[in-house]
Image 1 (cartoon, one colour):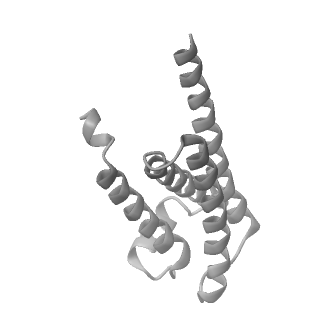
Image 2 (image 1 turned 90 degrees about the vertical axis):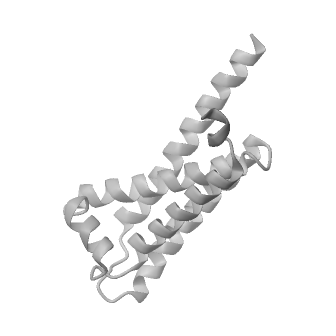
Length: 136
């Protein structure tokens, strides 16, 4: 099982699937059934919507990091994953200006970025602990 999880194709499938989900949920109209379902269950309040945005972009950043960490040094992978997460968070909010029943909000943008930064911090902390174990 451990070998399967370290496989590039599996990580890439997870990344692409989550990216498509994030793009659909953040840039499509509330009339789309999946968006409507998520909005009514998780995002029915301001805090619920913010939590949904943070979680969505946290998982997206982690998935990108896990793919990149197989290809490049982990410290570079983390920086690149965080930067891409921040840009995608801002881009999806900006894209909402083009959707009739969606609105760009600072709360959503900050929630997107919070999810990205939380994952970046956690990965950095775990990597530091792993490196310290190796040294000792």
